[in-house]
Length: 409
Image 1 (cartoon, rainbow, N blue to C red):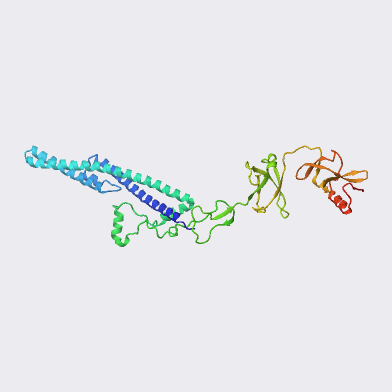
Image 2: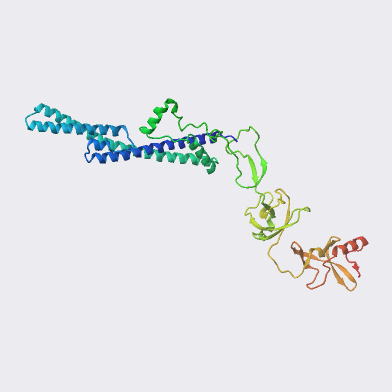
């Protein structure tokens, strides 16, 4: 996908990153100038000679540094002239006018020196504070721009790639930040105008920056299967438009519709036996959730079972039936469901008699997945046919005998 919003966000991030680099260079320069100012002011406090001052090595120099040194040199010269004229005046050699001229020059030079000294201390401190504040503000703006990228789905690795791409442009040779660097000035003078390099902020040659910044790769938030596609080539999308539907089919939900009359017997944690048709073997699970709401249309509530589906056998949308094992209940007579047969619209169980087997009518009670209660017609402990009842029924039906017919063995 291509996103104008993402392109704008990336461009803003790169601009802020570049501005932060400039702020860092400005801060480095301000720190160097402040350190040189402190060193110069500390030396001037000891009233050095001009030779001693010339021997002082400063890491960085600005216009204010140069003006202060010049003012101090003028102050030293006028002070010496003042002291000489004063001595000559006391000896009667020089006139008072010459002395007053020397005095005026000395006071003026001293005032200019003090102003330059205080101005250098103030200006360098102010420049350093402004550089620090600018860098801090730019760091906050860069952090906000990066957070915007994360909101738009850009990963931390992609943000780092953007940063490295910008840093790699023009990084083959670092530029000196000192405009008064003697080595750099000599190198440029020897090489001529052609030696001037393009600005380090040029952003057209990087491999990442040369790509379209608005390209928006789609990434699934989890591993799964694409089960639906909602877009076509060239389609315009809004920010909240669905693009693909991805489902994690490693587990599936089985939603059962439970009738209102059965809800009192259904609860979370019960064992459920699920039949998915002839081609798929039955499976067993547990109820994980029972809806507290009954659907007004179907008068049923939802009971959900979560099944593992590592092989993808259980497909969403399949129709299933299920038996829920409710709480155990003791009944007097319980027989397998296969022992009960339907003959002449009556439920019967085959019991042995002196004359053979009798199809005895019974009344059924509650049932489970495999067994059914005999509420009436069979006594506790009485023998009955548990297996083969269907074959007996078939013989009775084909022979035309009624439910009261016996069968000898």
